[in-house]
Length: 510
Image 1 (cartoon, rainbow, N blue to C red):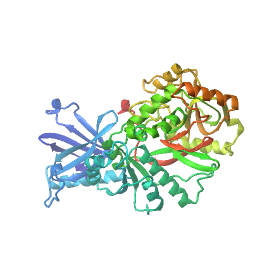
Image 2: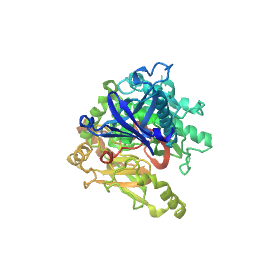
Image 3: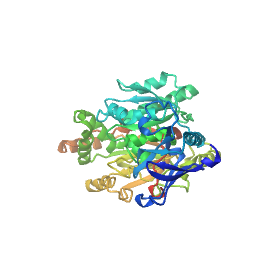
Image 4: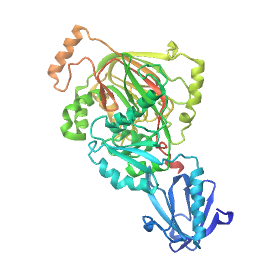
């Protein structure tokens, strides 16, 4: 575009505006005569948040324009409230078709040069059965037309069985795709996570079952269109579980690295996870809920109520490798937000640690806690969701190579309920005498075998408490899947995957 056209007078409907393209921002200022009608005299749009720009007006976009038009339309991200985005359409009228054409070319050129890798072709998996069974409706009514508008080609697959998406990713030729998208809940995301990570390790010749193996990061980004009952991963990485918001993040090519926890048992990989690995309370809730599937998503609330009343505790030993650095800790009240320095500088810090301590098994960095636990929780993110706005660990980071270990020692029912309630009332859930939290890089858990006397005592307790359980051990809940083992090792893999996201924005800075 010629320099004289980088700033010129145009019209939006009947209003005269001065349109400017400078640096990475498209800006227009309303003529002073019309300013009193606007909340702001000037509008700023980052170029990297422009979805697309076309000749003509928005209404005629579906038709091919045969004659030159003096109009052009900008489709861009609009922040409705907090973390929710929508698509905003603005049509400009230029003095002539040549000026309009020059503006379209200039903006398109700037969009390419912003540095964000926007996807051209996506592999989309829809789970028609998960959550409330509305995934297909959500995709075709709210998302697919946005992809088409942005010129993104989509290959859509509706899954017909469990692990359909995972198995497809293990075998398909993925070289033509710029990313994979799941339309569903956290279970659907987990399928894509396992499929992509395992496929990447197979292609790289890395053995997943070796706990000390350095896993190869995945190149393809994962997009999440939330259509489940909880959508924890989406909410904790974007601050919203709105499908349109997620689709717009995918379209503009946002990238958010994410740590992944790998769980091992007996020298074998069990599962990957990004949010919760829970033993005790959350493990029992998941196991009990399996017998209530006919209730639907409400089964988790019913199972949770039953598990709280039972107040089961389990003895064992937790060993963990604490992340001994001064950059962050679970009690520092700093939140992981867009552009987080703790995450962005973590690669350099981890490299320094590796050079100073080449062996992960350094005895000085491992700690041990033995006791009777109501809950043992490991989370690689805040694990926030609409019901728990702060999540399990409010200051956990998405991509710093650590996870937060939360130990809840055996206590009274009142104290345990107090701890659980703090996940919803936004009070400090760690400021309790029976709770401790550590930022870790690895963990090992060994259950304690009960002697005959303790086994008899638990059996008697079960007879007088219908909500209790005679079991000496609990179950591990790994992102909503039951692990068929008790002894477990967990290791955090730094920035193993990437999402089409940018983290939760600090709205005070927008």
